[in-house]
Length: 239
Image 1 (cartoon, rainbow, N blue to C red):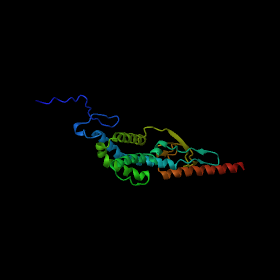
Image 2: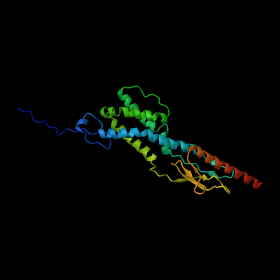
Image 3: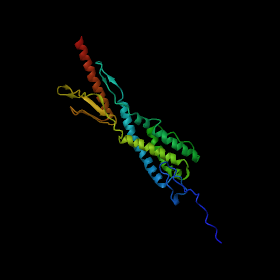
């Protein structure tokens, strides 16, 4: 006599715990929390984060160096390059490094490992944090019940970085003062504009260009020198 077929009508097939996925796990994935496709795409995102961070950090450093408002004796104020706060928030102490570190801390606590070592500033820490997460991602997808939220956090973090690197916000152009380049009849002094996300400024009148941080400093110094000379001329005329 055979045993009756068990009633499995109430059985719920395991699904991926990652938000926005929740697909049914394959039979070979039945002992996992997150599906293999989610693991694979997360591994790619983790691998790309250090390079994305480096690009954002370069942009932030450029804008910090150009954020000072300069003024001349004539009362003319040169508008600064507006800081991209969204970029600065990601490369600063509470940005990418902190968000990756929070995931690492949770994983270490679950594994019973010692706390994470100090890895320096965000630029130094991000590659090390990404390496830790990449090395332990398989364990997390297989054995860490809360991994779905971490995968979703990494998805959002990667998306934020990618959007800024690819300039999906399309910030407009801003006035950054006048061109201080010397031309045949004196100083060019044509108005200059720049994009907040770009390293390059080019004068449409004399074709002078500034691209690197050092050149941006030269641009500011040149503008200040011209304004100072104009102030002296105005003072002499008034006297």
